Picture 1 (spheres, rainbow, N blue to C red):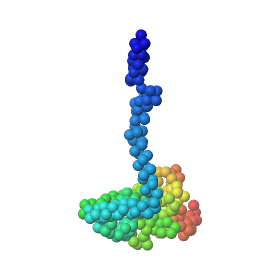
Picture 2: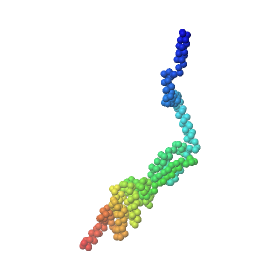
Picture 3: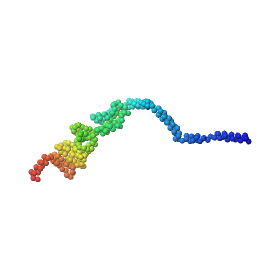
Picture 4: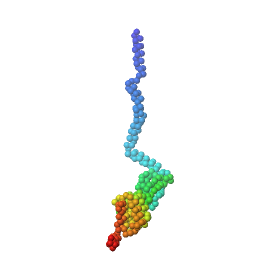
Length: 297
């Protein structure tokens, strides 16, 4: 019986050593390897950290950093200064004279220059901000040409301010400063604070004065509310705040029927539509009183 018992104990010991079940730590490690986040960390995180560490150690030297920056700068300039990227000249269309010179003066570089050094968006905004420019487009054409197309503002009147004479367009925007009225005698004259903001209305009034256009000297904005029409012989037509065109047409009609403006009249006051008044000169007033006294009326 003794030998049989020994053989059975040996068999049990061999069976226990051959157990394929993993240990507790081995089982936990296998479970951890099955976690997607942990596997991603091993595949990407560890290489990234090692690379970052190596780059940090390498770039800790100031000489190495300067050498890398210089190499990048040289590579960039070698690309930017290639012939196909160079701008050799600038063409300005739509602007002439002083306006064209002002447009050319805005380009801060000398040609030839790299197209990478030109900010066409900023350049277009600067050109559009110029007096006399209504709109502009800037682009680089094949062949190394910086093409600038300008839509200029068209002056329609001369605005007299306290200090200068300014050409304005139909919207009241400044176009150009002129030295004297004789520089643009073909344009009507407007004056007074706020006159440039009412250019469309001023143009309508000027068109209404066509029958007496040769006598027109200009329009004066009064109190930024209404207009006075100034004629030769120091005559003035005072218009109301509203219905100014209709009031002026009434005066023109009176001139055609009774020649009111052809007489010795200083002011025709139309500010009160129900009661227009006429102011005569001092000499005409004296003569009128003399006639009235002689006639006994």
